[in-house]
Amino acid sequence: MAISLNSISKTKGKQAPRILLYGTHGIGKTTFAANAPNPIFLFTEDGAGQLTVDSFPLLKSYEDVIGALNALLNEEHDYKTVVLDSLDHLEPLVWEHTAVKAGKVSIEDFGFGKGYLEALNNWRQILDLLDRLRNEKNMAYILTAHAHIKRFDSPECEPYDRYQIKLHDKASALVQESLDCVFFCNYQTVVQKTDVGFGKEKTRGIGTGQRNIYTVEKPAYIAKNRFNLPEKLPLDWGAFVTALQNNKAVGTNING
Image 1 (cartoon, rainbow, N blue to C red):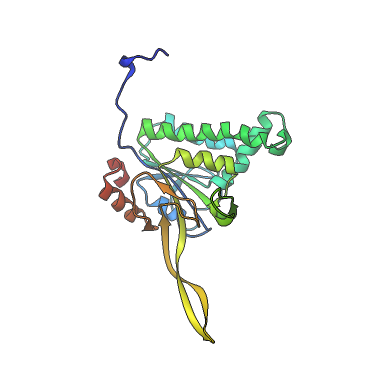
Image 2 (image 1 turned 90 degrees about the vertical axis):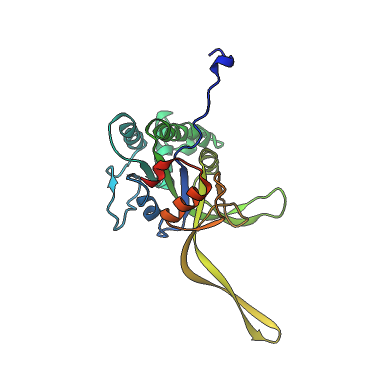
């Protein structure tokens, strides 16, 4: 393609948000997504629980996921949010497809981590289709994942443990850089100190039952947002929309 001043155009500006929610099992990630405008779910695990939502049949292969995304892209519908639940159950499907396509038995048969690099091409295909839904159908998309505690090797200090997305490091990095928001979901904990005598204190964490999303990265967890959101919000779609509207960051389709 020849590049000239005639090829300059304006970017689209405000668009539907691209969100990843990750946290412990059962905290309410799926419920959050179910309250987004007119959602359609792509389940790679049986995670709906008691919720009644529109969904494709359980997607058991990489090809199933691609097929569902293409159906949303090419067929007429009124859905405004696509929810992929969850990424860590999708990952083995990506690995299996990557191995079979290369004539390998498993992702490990590539050797020296090469299989995980090759798998990124298939992750990119999924992310590209999601972005096409956003750009061509004006759909928001929400991805969910579980969290695990893993050592973080910081270049600035001694290694420490923190909550991270339960994906291979390379896939996790690719997904994170592609999204507007990476939200860590957790229960709010209050630290209580008790005097046990002899000048000593006992410290313990007490759960409040409040479920929050954390929007800015801290040493304890990965998070980010491009909308200048508060560092902490209730794990509730309405609270998220209110914060976005206060910032006037995205288009109107977040309200349905």
